[in-house]
Image 1 (tube, rainbow, N blue to C red):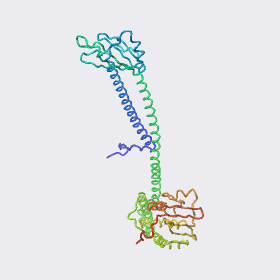
Image 2 (image 1 turned 90 degrees about the vertical axis):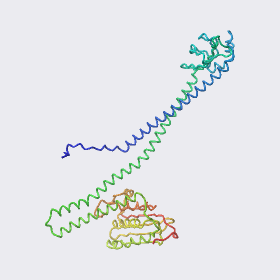
Image 3 (image 1 turned 135 degrees about the vertical axis):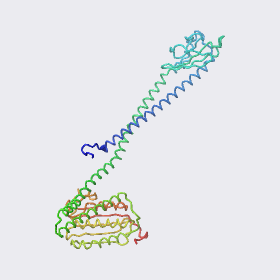
Image 4 (image 1 turned 180 degrees about the vertical axis):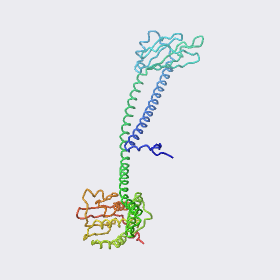
Length: 437
């Protein structure tokens, strides 16, 4: 046998708050974006650097080829050449001539810098590359100088260029990329924060409504369930009760069951209408539907000693679902009847206003104060907490959803102690488009 006090049942991990999930998603997105931006910046820098070095190599090769046909400068002419060819110094380039057997330059031209000896040479190789910390050089033989007896070139030429200007451009590029990455990251962070907040806000509202709905539904179901349980328990305990007492208990059970059935029906209807979908809509005469519902309610108004005044125009054609529109009208009439005292008046009007069909149901009941008006169409909300008047606070919420499903709207005006007026606007059809059957 399993001991419920010592068994280790798996526990569910607590759900994270919505805002915490938003922050985690935002951080994950921003981390991914930062990595992507850094990769893009690294690729751009690498491509730019490779292009710059390729251009420098091409430039050095062209200069070396053009100089290779010239003979070695004669001794004492370096100063004259240096003065005549200032372009080499201004472009941070240096030309050096080397004897085949020596590793020190015989002559120099351009920006003077000590680059050290030539690389180890191979008799079968004519072009060499050398690279230092801040310079790049190409080495090749001087064709005009000829070759030694062993076939090796007599004079070698080294053309070098400083990398400092290129590194300065790299530094500027790094600054520009860093600024671009920071700016893009900041703008993306701001936009992401706004977008996620905009996405989370409706979810928060939905969750809040869901929690409130759960509380209200459980609260409304608690009464009928308690009545069912109490009467059933008393019926089981009191076996010798009189038939009249047993009958009253069964009537209480039946009443509580009926309340639960109505509540469940209303909840199912609301759940279906949340999708905003109509089943097989067709042209209907709304005025005729109003007259039918008024016929059902006339006896109720008479029993409550309430006056009923009507003004229904003919041919008020709308596109809709008859059962839902009947429910809309019934809920509004029930609401007016419930909150209008004896001797009060309920006025029902239906008329065409341009492209809209408007239904007005006004009463001289208890009315609402301005603070209550925004909550009229909320689920389970009632102006009075007195449950003796009946209803679960779903009638007006259902009416609102039915109006929205038909492409219309519902609104209310009210003054406390003077009554309320509910106005329903539905899109009308032209009179020639068809009539209800």
